[in-house]
Image 1 (cartoon, one colour):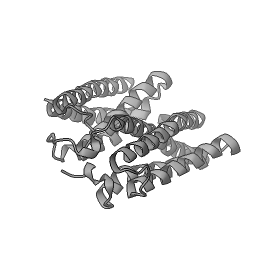
Image 2 (spheres, rainbow, N blue to C red; image 1 turned 90 degrees about the vertical axis):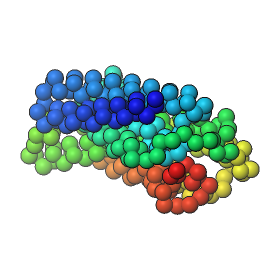
Image 3 (cartoon, rainbow, N blue to C red; image 1 turned 30 degrees about the horizontal axis):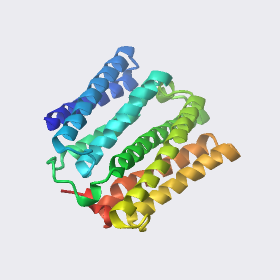
Image 4 (cartoon, rainbow, N blue to C red; image 1 turned 90 degrees about the horizontal axis):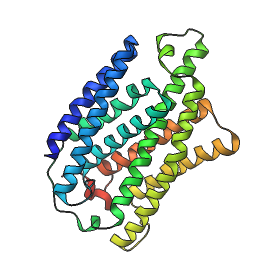
Length: 274
């Protein structure tokens, strides 16, 4: 049953992405409302997919690549819906939804069977670790999108040849503030993800830290975001520098999530392909 809900969510995210892109092109309010409605229904279906898989599997359904991609995409859409309640940045869906769509399409092509839980995953710390880590990464996805939009909008303004895209993106100060807010909440969650992961590692492998590739790249990502947050709080980094650093940090987070599992063998390869 969980697969049917997931497939429905995938199709709805596809149509929602197309509707958001149509909104950017035509700037019709009705397209924005249609896109938001489709994505919201898709999120509800995706939630049912995760809940039914949890019931069918008997454990937190974030144990392999398919489940991880699905869970990450679900978190990203959830962040989009929450942020839109407060900030009403309609164009944000045109940046976040395609990322979630790419993740679910990737997951769509993977085996979706439910397998017995690996011994290392049978821990109280597993669900805590994945929730903190994925929620932090979902917020960093928002930080990344704000950084990309900031650079595009700044380029348009500096060129003094305002194109159609300038009318579609929010003001620079709003993008900078939204990027900072997502960073401010995402960094503690990433920190908690690393801490709970270390405690879990001690439980599973007898050591808090093994310099496994996943652990090493998690630390690199943490240091990048720590530097960005420090510079924003102490030096007053804003605008272009913060946007570029947010993009670099997200690329590191993405490599930690996908690249390490697929390219670098280590203790975390149990979450790899089935």
